[in-house]
Image (cartoon, rainbow, N blue to C red):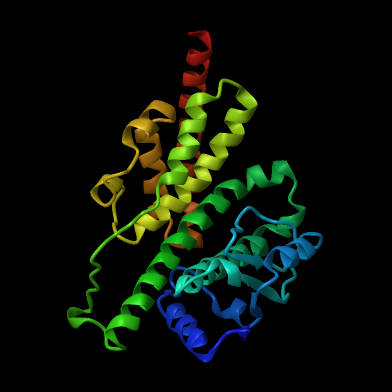
Length: 285
């Protein structure tokens, strides 16, 4: 792995954070040696230039963008937006994109060039479920790497006694999920609803990924008192949503994702069907 425009302290933090990723979760060794990480002040321009050759995959955000090369020995990049980071947030942003690259390498190696997948191939190979799962896993691992790196920045290099880390406060951003739910409850048209539904799935995958660092079971309310129980029940079904969370949790690596992907799809279909029924009832009222 090569890093450009990073200080020695930043490089040290990133290397420490990489150590908090288990090889049993995602095998990064074959990919990291072929990855260049660049911190840039021209993030939007560089992303736009790359889009013609490497179209966005739906895994990008305003902090960082992974540039996945589908060639077997291709060189990958991660662009970091210098203007969107503060303190150690770059650790969180980069680790998430590193995990995406590792997962994309596995999927691409098994099913062929992801940029050339036809819709029917993507559906048959559970590509859309894969994108949601890698969002979840990347957020879970990035949250852990950032939290533990931050802990050591304050407490030094030694691990805590007993090997158990503790954190004074847990803050799980849930506003984006609530915004999506509000849109779905308000819209009365099928096409915007379908688009909003997939945006909700993306936000839920990200939200559940943050939660998953703190818990092993699908009980979000035990960690986040703001978990939108009523809103989910009224929109796509609380039980369906928790079934999706549990399926994500059970998919701890790429191979277990393949075993759980039908369950992930089953939860998504159940959410969609319940949402459609309520949309139809709303339009008939």
